[in-house]
Structures are given as structure tokens and as C-alpha cells.
Image 1 (cartoon, helix red, strand yellow):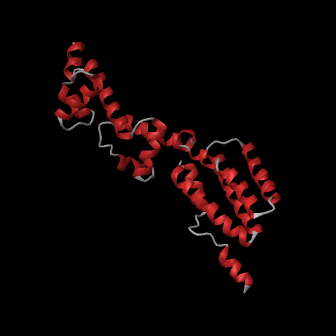
Image 2 (cartoon, helix red, strand yellow):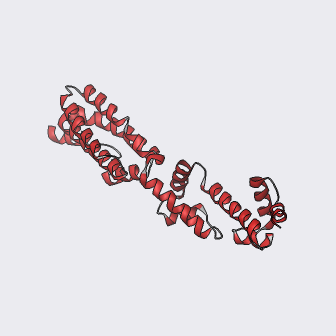
Image 3 (cartoon, helix red, strand yellow):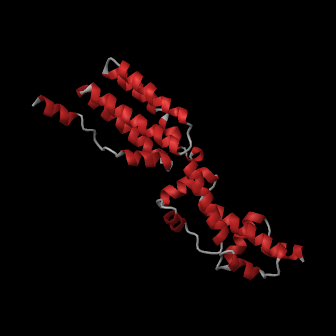
Length: 227
């Protein structure tokens, strides 16, 4: 009976698989990872109060997957030492409070690995998207369609792109198109209307407004200047 009761107590609520934790780190899901780690610490205390050995094991498993995930996105092999240090420190914990303090110390640094601008996979994704824009700037490039193409949710794609590129995806596409438009106006014989359609605008008035907002003049000014 006693062992059954302990078994019931040590099951953490809202448990997340290690593959999901790995994905949070690789894809830069900082908010999700922070939320998981907060819940993990709450659950860890319950586990430790029932079974310190199990709590130490859960803590080391989590540290291990975090370390391996950071190595996947470019952390040096020396970070493996973190696992050994965490194991040593958790073994030295003589009480639940000591173990919780140790766990909180290690996990407080874990979300750094999920910062998108330090995440090699997030950077590679943004570079891929920039290449897509360069090749297909005249097409319909909605953030929803591109997010699907790179296998991310729309909201997470928008978050990653903004964090890595320094601007929202929609703004990046707009500026890229309008910079191409200026080059075409200055270096080709295409009419303004032809340039408008070539860079993905179906409506001339919206093209004129966007062009003036970015370049400070109407597109005709650059056509005149190039003649």
C-alpha cells in the first residue's frame, strides 16, 4: 500500500516527453521551455518529498536532454561536463530544499539555449526563408504559407523570424520587393506598372504608397532619374 501511494505521488503533472523538450530547444521555443521548467520544478518538489532518488534521476535526465539539445544547435562538447556537475551536486543534496535549490540554479540558465538568435537551426531556417523570398518575391508570400513550408506554426515562425532577422517577416518581404523595384526602375526599361506586378503587387496604388513610405519618393522619381 505504501509503495503504491508513493508511486502515485511521484507522477509529475503535465509531463512532456523528452523529444518535445528537445524540440523546444532546437526551435527556440523560449516561452514554452520556460513554462515547462517552472512546472518541472513544482513537480520535482513533490517527487523529492516522496522519493529523493527518483527526484535526482528526473533532474539528471532533464539536464542531460537539455545539454544534448544545446549540442545539436552548436554548443561545444565541453558542455557535457554540466551533466557530471549536476549529478555530483544533486547527490550531495541532503534535503528536499537543497535539491530544489540546486535544480533551480541549473535550470535558470537553460532557457538561454532557446534564444533564437543564438540557435543555429533557427538561423538556418531564416536563411532558407530569405532565399525563398529572393527566388519568389513576385509570388504570394504569406507568413502562413512560408511557415508551413518550413514546418512551423505561423505564430512560432513569426516569432523566430523576427528574433533572428530583426524585423517581422511581412516587413522583410515588403522591403525586399521595394528595393528590387527601385533597381528595376533605375536599370531596366520596364514601366512602373510592369515593375509593380513583377515584384508582387496587384494594386498600383498600394505599390505607390509602400514605395513612397520606404524610399521617400514616388516610383516615377527613380524612373525619371534613370533616364
